Structure formats: structure tokens, C-alpha cells
Image (cartoon, rainbow, N blue to C red; front, top):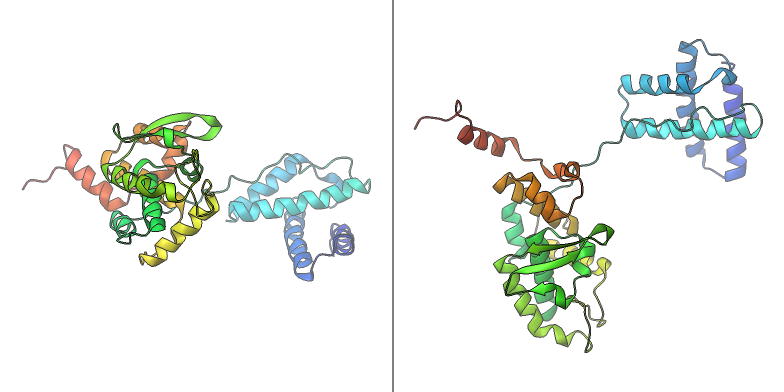
Length: 299
């Protein structure tokens, strides 16, 4: 047994009794900590008191070299921090050398988009009951202008200018931006405005309201979009962010203008917009063949 292991055993017994953790959780803690024991032995470290921030960073690099993903490294590093906090608490260490040391950045999962054909299928709603008219209008407007869910529900009547085909929205940091809306969105808005008064009290400012005669909630919008995804037989789960992401993806595929899409989405940083640039290779190849002087094909 390594000289490093007894303190790990003491720690695991301590958290098992104090925090009531399950045997499975304790086993996971042990496995994560024992990986650091292996790395420390490779570095000829025989006592936890020899550990410093430089060695912790080297161990994180070793885990990364061994092919561990960022999320797994972050989990193991969290277990090490907790264990070293315990050693500080019981005066075995004077400070925690793992504090302030980060795991490699987690990969951001790329949001999925809806294909153009599937988007047309989703928005091709024939039902004419009031809720269907409202829901179609919400989805058309969100896809029309790439709105965030919070921006959609916070639109007031005065924010919409149908004659100019514009809507004013308030984004993150209370920043307002004026956005164009499609002709199709204008048509559905006109249809919704004809019956909106059936759903709200006089003087209600909100553009979209619920059966409770008040501004519709984000949760309600999410539920309604999920319902329509199933009803219109879409192949994947539908949520508001997918409509926003699909707007960005389709605009980029058509225009290639990243700066314009950044402005429309209300992103302060262009790097945020670049998450949406996952154009498929076939599409890129087509653009390449059309645009590059040496790639143009003779007919």
C-alpha cells in the first residue's frame, strides 16, 4: 500500500459518515483520487505534504496527455480539491495547492439546427383555432429574426411596426436592437392581432399572452413548441433555441456574412456567433467550387 493511501481512506470514511454519501459515490471518489496517487508515485512523491501547485498542474497535463476529456479531468480535479481541503482542515497541509488550478476548457456542445425543409414542415400549420394561430405566430417571429426566448416573451405591442416590417427587442444587458421581420411573420402577426383581445384584459401591453390573460411564460412557450414538433412529425425535439440557431445557420449558409448575423443575433463578441458556423462540408465545397478561380469547373 502506498504511503499516500491511508489519508485517502480516512477522508473517504469521514465524508461517508458526515455527508451520508452512497457507496457508489465513495467508490467514484476513491477511483479519482487513486489516479492521482499513481501519478504522484511516477513523480517520486511519497507524502501529501510534498504536493504543490506546480505538481498539480503537471498531473492535470498528464491526465490530458492520457486522453481524458476535459469534463473527466474537471471531475477528478474537483475530487482532489475536496480531499486537500480536508487535509487543510485537519492541519496536515497549510494550504490547498489545487485551488485556482483549472481543468482544460470544456468543449461547448454545438447546438443543433433544424433543416430548412423541416422548418417549413414545422411552420406549415393549417389549424385555425386561436392557440394554433398564436403559436404559429410565435414560431414564425422567432425564426424570422433569430430571437432569444426571453426576447420573444418580452415583446410589447408597441415594439412591433408591421408597416415597416420591424420589431424592437431587448436583449442581454437591456440592450435594444431593431430587427427586420419576414413577410410571412407579418401575415401571422396580423392574424394573431385580430384575435389577441380574446386572450387579454384591456390595457395589456404584452404581444403574446396565455389563456390566463397575462404575458406568456417562457415555460409555456417551450411546452407549446415541443408539442408542435411532435404534432408536425419533426424528426428531432423542438425547442426555442433550435429555432434561433436554425435562423443563424440558414442565414450564414445563404449569405456567408458573419458580421451581419452577429448584429441580428445581438452578440457582443464575434466569437460567440462563430459557434453557429457549422456549415456542412458539401455546402462549403459547393461555395468553394463556385468561388475559387482555380476550382471553377468548365461546363
